[in-house]
Image 1 (tube, rainbow, N blue to C red):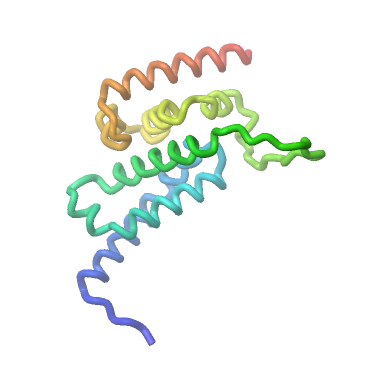
Image 2: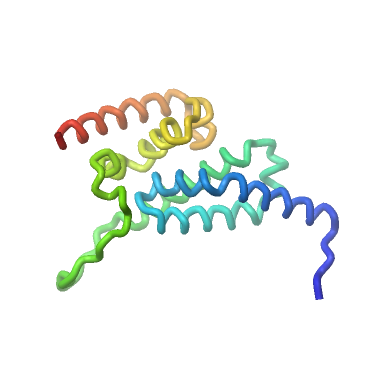
Length: 168
């Protein structure tokens, strides 16, 4: 038995489904750059899309760019998770065998340097150079001022130059 939805509800769901279909590849790339690995990226994107999808009609009523809204939610969620998890966890004994990473970019010097940046700086660099957004678009996506975007970008680029330069 299939439930018949009112036209407005069906339209909202269709709009959100289309948004996800078109934005998902870029959101996964952005999540990968934020988190440092594809598995955490997929988890981040899924949890944020669940939240955005549950309030999709409200997002549309706010007259904001849904993609910028979603990116900002991803950055905020990532920073919140990072703050919760950054506390050191002590264990009685070290494991005998380490876990091997399957991320093929892990040993690339630029990728390592990017992962070492603070979350906001990493988000600014990824949105600027990977997604090609302007300073204004980045500011809107992250909920910060354009001046903060400029300063975070400048600090991040200096750190990347230094880190990649040391590796040579």
